[in-house]
Structures are given as structure tokens and as C-alpha cells.
Image (cartoon, rainbow, N blue to C red; front, side):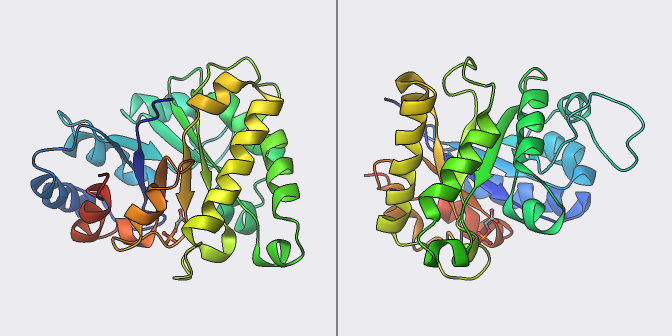
Amino acid sequence: MNRKPLLAGNWKMYKTSRQAREFFQDILARLNPFPADREVAFGVPFTSLEAAVQAVSGTPIIIAAQNVHWEPEGAFTGEVSAPMIAAAGAGAVIIGHSERRQLFGETGPGVNKKIKAVLPAGLRPIVCLGETLAEREAGLTFEVLAKQLAEALAGLEKAAPGALDLAYEPVWAIGTGRTATPETAQEAHAFIRGWLAEKISPAAAGATRLLYGGSVKPDNAAQLMAQPDIDGALVGGASLTADGFAKIIQYDRS
Ligand code: PGA
């Protein structure tokens, strides 16, 4: 199954629109020629969406939002909808990041509603899941992943295979410098792909990209990406500098 690798940056709450423009000028100069055998995306703050879209126009880079509300419009102070994000020119949305789940009360059913809202808006969901350190140490990793998958994908059995990307991000590896070993990440990815084959369809399992996230750096990206079930990376800290993230994008695929 041909799954084009996706290298996605997650800027979190970093970079103003001016800083975004400067960043893209810098990284586009480093990605010349742009590698055709991989996709690149950036999850940017809402306030930088339009500046980022303009800065990458004419390139294959996809701009993503980092959150979305499930209603198209309404009295929801402080929220932003899928049609609004699409109208800003973005092509994807990161959904269910562990920071949203842990710090902002995001729930599995909420993740499900958000996925169902962004697909009809023509946006690609990048859906995050992963266990905490306590859950891993208690031997609950696969149970937690199965629950998160079941909640996120409820009612989406008929969605086009490969319509969304999943990002396995063990919470203990995010922002900690403690990357999962390629073997540990592969084991979780193989579990997720097996779950998709059994509960959704073999076609969905074959077509769905599984990204790894958690302290991906220029010096560990190639080893992680060499694993058979790792189809990309979701990168936080190391996506904030053009030099570092260009190196991750240009990881050695040979
Ligand atoms: P990190 O973050 O690369 O800084 O660990 C990953 C993420 O939160 O998506």
C-alpha cells in the first residue's frame, strides 16, 4: 500500500503571523527543490492561518488548524468552525491532541464530532491518540488506544479509506525529549493498524497514514520513519525552527 509520508509540524501556541511569514520564507529556501515523495503540513495558530496560507501559496505545503468546533456557526464565543478554517485556505485540522484532552477537557465523543464536522468541509483530520506514562506502566497502552480509536471513529466506518490521518503520540514522549524507540512506536502503530483492519476494514487499515509524534528530532526522524507502520511524524518543538524542521522533512528515505 502506497502511503505517502506526511511530515507535519504542530506549532502549538507559538508564532505571530509575521513570525509565520518569516519562517516560511526561510524554510522554503531550504526546501528547494521541494521533495516530491513526501507531504508537508503545518498546524498553526488561528491568527496565523491566512498569513501561512499566503506564504506557502504555489507550494505543496498544507496549512492546518490545531482545533475546530463541530458546529458550522452559532453562538459559541471563542470558537472557530470547519467552514471558517476551510475559507481561510487551510487544508487540514489537528484534532484531539493530548494537550487539548488533558488541559481543555477534550473528550473522545468531542473528537468524533469534530472529525465528522471537518470531513464535509473538505479538510483532512489529523487525529491524535496516545497513552500517558501511568497508563503505559500499568500495561494499559493497547486498551487506551482501542478506546480512543473506538470513540474517535464511531460512525465513520463508511468514510473513504485514508480520508484521515492518525497520529500516535505517547503523552510521556511529548515535549519531554524522551522519544519512543522505533520498536516501541512500531508496536503501537501495528496495534492501531490491526485495530483498523478488524473494526473498520482492511482497506482503511492499508490506506490510513499513521504518524508518530513525541520528541521527533532531525537525528531520530529517519529511524522512526523506517518502521513499516510509521507513515509520518507530527512534530512540536522541532518544527519551530526552519533549519531543524527542514532536516526532518528531508530525512533519508533510502
Ligand atoms: P514534541 O511535540 O515534538 O515537542 O514532543 C509533539 C506534539 O505535541 O505534537
